[in-house]
Image (cartoon, rainbow, N blue to C red):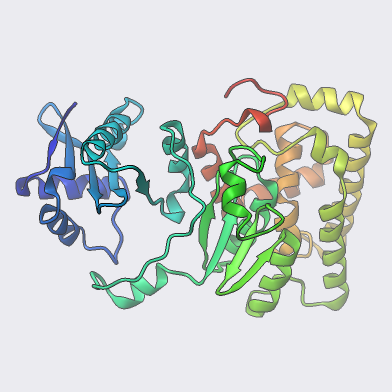
Length: 376
């Protein structure tokens, strides 16, 4: 691949590439973005060319303190061939030549899976939040306003973080607008990037964390309760007092219980481990007892409330047990037909499907989260 600076004649091809990669947004006019970069350090606006066609691009810059990188794009049909890596390394070399000590980049909340790509190149989350204020409106004001939701949810790796999954699925399935901040698990020691990022926000050093203005709400159950009060119109708890009490009890039971199942069968969305499940089922009576208790709980609630979810309509309780559905299915643990049907319905929910798809796209194998696999 030939890497060269962009020219004004490249505008249509570069914007078409951005659009093919899903990088354009209504509040950012791509034509204006192209023109602004051509007027400011154009030598750091790079195109990757293969057989005369622009198949990759990146914007870079240096402000005298930090280097920045934006709009990294690679033709979707050519991904996996090292083109993105080559562009990033080219940018790094160019910035080092200018005396730049550190390169920063931002990842959109709806493109968090790309974090795995940057992690492979040696990048890691900083212990900082990204703040911004738009000075020039490229698109309609309401569009830009919608791009900056008030709520922020800090989560860990989707493939492994069951506690992060619960409020994320709850908010996504209910239609509550929020910005996701994914903090990659790189270890849980005090010097890990994960801890250095989380501890200033949540002294417990755990995810998930919900941020609403100046209010910080850690802990999954506390987040669920806060959302139910903050958005009563979504009916996150059942409206009936008896059902509401049972739903809270079911969530509290999940919050504190089923330790054997959680320990022996940690969530791992991209893995299918029926052989491990068979051994766990054979050798660990505590796991069998946990599954029997879950069976009894779900069967009773489905019978009492008529399905299709535990309390009729989707509620916090279904979000709470969605990771359990993934465990039961991923380890192929035996369940009754009615429970298997409920699992199917939960895994088909759009909010759950979105989490699963993003987890599989992460492609981020963490050996300290993998008791049963040596590699992907």
